[in-house]
Every structure is written in structure tokens, then in C-alpha cells.
Image: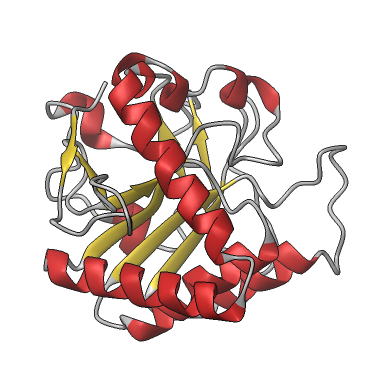
Length: 228
């Protein structure tokens, strides 16, 4: 399980909670929300065994920080002024981190279209940063994808940005990475077919990305992670 540490001095407004987080695996910071609570379309065996509900993610300090970020975000969504302030705070925090690689959610997901629109604004504000967005928001709770779904529309707009990789995540271990129109190559876990997916090398190099940036840079390459 990756260690988690603060990456930035930026705080959730009105608290002492770090706005951004850093896992030891990745080359840059991320944003962390509560698993399941911020995953409205969670489904399948991968979600049932979510890594973000185990290990150090179960520590009260980690969970309390995720809740604080989630509460701040939901409050921001209630008004245009709140949304603008959220976008400004997030843009400044990511920019101040000095990193050119950012993962949107090491825990949590795009929980509604308005939230995704705030991330769209942040990604536009920071063209020098490569954003990776893994998501299961591509499927409806009942499994049927609606073509005109508002959240899917925003995800496609995000995917159209040159600095953003939006990867739909598989629902079950061993499945092939999903292919979703308008998004990039998907990701899965515990699928050993090297002809159909790139095998994440982190588990053979100390649990870290190392020099690999496939999730961010190789948008047309499906990725399979080890079960964890």
C-alpha cells in the first residue's frame, strides 16, 4: 500500500487539512475524497475491494481529511462564488506544487457534472500540467450508459483537452479495459493479457511509477494494474 504524505502547504480553506495529497507511488500530487461516498457509480468487484478503503486509507486522520475536502467541495458547489473560489484554490495549489503530473483522485471519483466542470476549469487553467483522471463514472448504476448523460458530456470535454487523460476503469478484476466513445483507453486490474493492455510496472519497481508516465501520456494504451 503506497504511503501518503502532504505535498503542498495549501490547506482546505478554514482548516489545517492539506488540500493536496501525495502517494509514494506517483510522481506528483493528487486529490483525495472519501471512497464510495464520492463514487456515485461504484459497481463491480474492483469497487467492492477498493484499495482506497483499506490500509492507511482507513486511518482516522486520512478519513477526516478526505471528509473535510468533500465537505468544502460540496459547499462550493452551492453557489457560483463558491465554485469560482474552489477553482482558484485548486489551480493555485497545483501550480504551487511545481509538479507537471497530477492525478485527479487517488480516492473518490467525479460525483456529478457540476463537480467535473470545476475540474475542467482547473485543467484549462494549467495547460503545463498533465492530468490523469481514472473514473467509473462512465457507467450508470444499472449498467446502461446514457448517450446524453450530463456527467459523461463533461468527461468528454475533459478528454478533448491536450493535457488530460480520462481513463474509464473496468468494473471487475480480470476484465479487459473498457472502451468508451469520447474517452481515452481504459484501465483494468489483474488482466495479464500483454497484447491487450500495458502491464503497470510499479509492482516490480518498489511500488512506484518510477520513470513510467503511461497513464498520463499514452492516451491510446490500455493499462492493467495488479490486484491490490
